[in-house]
Length: 455
Image (cartoon, rainbow, N blue to C red; front, side):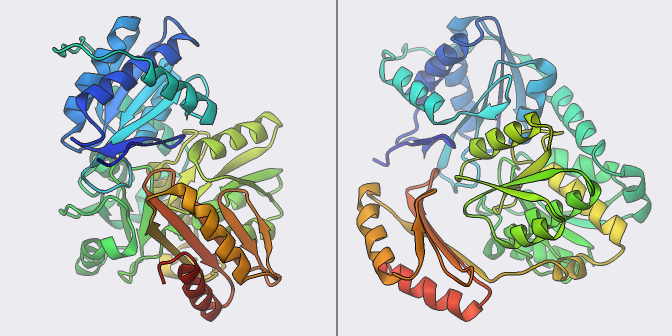
């Protein structure tokens, strides 16, 4: 049986295998204890993406949470960033998003969040959650979910209003963009269509089911829709709508790394003259660093994991700096909306870019720094074996500077770099290679994969 994948990125498992009704109940009990230890009379929000298993997982979670006496608000099917945002007006002590995010079916899982920071759990909080699960007794034979209050419309409306307040909505409406939308049939479908409608866009939804992760190879239907309807832009999300990938007016996927680079370049122009910190993780394209340097801002690097970005953003803001950032997987974080990745904010910012620059998105992106990059994932049955693989990769490149910010990173004199690390969300290792030289990237990737035993 596939084991649960538990980290500060959440809990994920195979539905009916490692992830059962009993598992969900135990995590509900443990999360209830964790929240109660911080706020004994608070509110907990629950939400889910569109995976069918989300309904019965929700019931089991509610049963586990019921004895703690929290006010339980059900947001229904909404994006993860909607949940994180709505923790602010409700002053929620905790929240649970039932999702496996970008993982494919038959995965599902949970993202646990705590107030008042409105972030996912850090490593210590995750350890406390796991300890609580281990000491939880067997669940009752009958599951009777408690009554909850429906706040779906209120949450979506409030989130959309906050996003719209971050951009020149009137200016965007005057353009009348044509936008193709592929939400993968996920939680982003309703709010994204509503957002684009309120921004005066003519929308062309893509009616398809695909793997959740919005990688270029999964976006053929979106590209076809952009081409068929002469769209200015195509947008793609994962199932819980925290990631955003873009397709140009030429029906070409731009790559998820460009989402963050484009959004940050625009925001840096908005805050020109201010002291700004841009937060990114170690796996994000260094094209972002070039943009940040051009604007005279500062890069703050973190380990992979949304909570690490959120905490770094909070520290920079507490020191009086303007701070924003995200991850190269299409995750834009603008703290004025939420402390986590938000595809709706990303969409609004991209439309504002196109409104201000009056050029097609292909031309806007062509003006940004572009460093060839390769990203792969390989099966990983035993994380302990990674140490031996790290040693083999390190031995291949004795001239490189090695460090261990997150897995193994090798940095070369010309600025090229290699990263090998275990995934927080899947039983895989992730490999990233980047350089100014595309040939070097291809050759180095091949050598690294051979050293890892997959080439």
